[in-house]
Image (cartoon, rainbow, N blue to C red; front, top):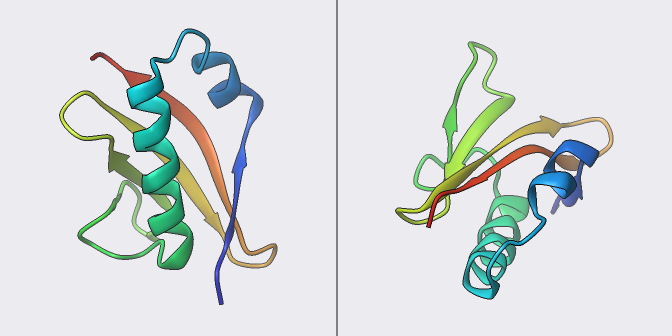
Amino acid sequence: MSYRPLLEESALRQMAGLPDEAFDTLVRLLSRICDDPYDRLLSVAVTGDGRERMAELGDAGFITFTVDEDARLIRVFDLVWVG
């Protein structure tokens, strides 16, 4: 069963001025993460329980997110783009 992405307010604020290329990369990455948020090729755990994770946006950025099992959501909190 797939998860749904939810961009929290903090991530939405960080999207201001995001280039089209970065937005496309973000959409593709979130689509793959929603299929399997624990795939070690896509993201790594940043806490011991594995639900708080980080995924790279190519070489130019990353997102941090939490897997909400109960609501079946991927809650994105941070978006960093340095490209």
